[in-house]
Amino acid sequence: MITSKLTSKAQTTIPEPIRKALHLKNGDTIAYAIEGEKVILSRVRIGVVEDPFTTFDEWNSDADRRAYADL
Image 1: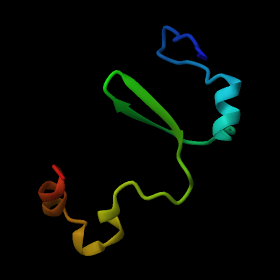
Image 2: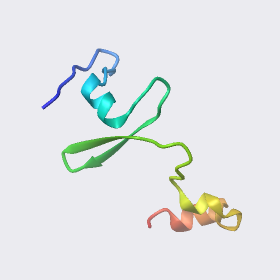
Image 3: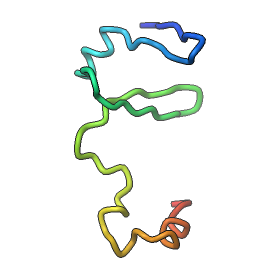
Image 4: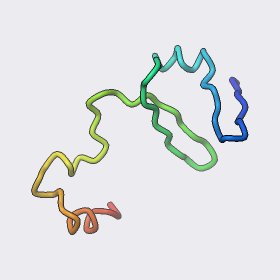
């Protein structure tokens, strides 16, 4: 298991083996997914759309966001 410490400002350094495994470099965006008591860290790839509804303008209103919020 690889570990790192949390600073008083809630910051940490991502250890080198993790950076290498995820091919992380300066300026990359990372994402966190919470699954129970575990957190999955992953690199966000450029061009990834997190909300598929924003692709379609006809589904991009406040009313649509409220309607689809619980899906």
